[in-house]
Length: 358
Ligand SMILES: Nc1ncnc2c1ncn2[C@@H]1O[C@H](COP(=O)(O)OP(=O)(O)OP(=O)(O)O)[C@@H](O)[C@H]1O
Ligand SMILES: [Mg+2]
Image (cartoon, rainbow, N blue to C red; front, side, top):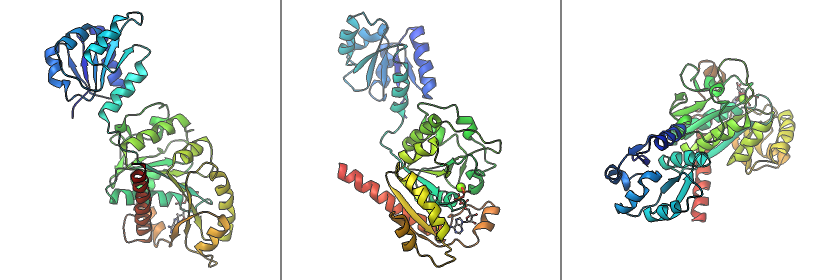
């Protein structure tokens, strides 16, 4: 894969640029003369030229291309702008002010930016409603569909979604490793660095004490997830704190899981009233069994939300969970077929929106 190209023979500038590339988690090619710059000139996704080699690059007629950035030292040196134009640079940047911009530009240059994964949040209408189960089953459906899928545990007081996925013994980063994160995370941090199971990358808790989750870390993970993955599923707690608010506002769709029971419907009305203020698309999943024969239409009428579907009770679910067999793994189970259908529908909506926007 072509790498960004740094063109300079000045050791101080080179050190600075290599440090920024390391911050961005990006490997680069370095050219300390025009001859080696020519070899990567056309294919490099981004070229940063130091002031020492600007004139020589311009004189060598390397050809016009986009994504060329000139590095300047002195804001008062008016000649830098003319020399940047001569080489075909799109902008001139000065360090240290432009450090965040350059880190972002280097990271963007090596990542595919046309991905904008779906973010689906699951939320329980009452405690033990089935939100975590649905989140894991939805991630399974995503992987079945060939989607690059990230499953995020948004409930610090839950048992850890890695346990439900059967990935508790798989190595990789967990939330406590990422709580200091803010700003831009490289896409690889949410794909390669996380534990994987069944083609799903999972960001969960470890078995230590519960830690407060900073909103900035959640924001960074969602942003990286959207860039790196086709589907990001976030299992939320019902506390609806700042972290949940961030996720609900970012989610393409939020699924409110409500058991088909009177008390669960009453509790879900409260959750829906709060979550509805933030969600773009809040949909109801009514899940069986229904001990009093309350139908999905009754629950829907009581809550006044669009119905994503009625989910039949999953047989032998608790035994499977105890044995570390993830829910929804089999496409023909109620959870499996429900999630396959839901995802088909969500993917269809996204494609339709893209088509209409084009
Ligand atoms: N699809 C389903 N079919 C049958 N039973 C289910 C289903 N989903 C969940 N359950 C039952 O509900 C229990 C709780 O499920 P789950 O942990 O997914 O709920 P939750 O909403 O995430 O709960 P919490 O409030 O603890 O976060 C399961 O152990 C199972 O007994
Ligand atoms: Mg849960």
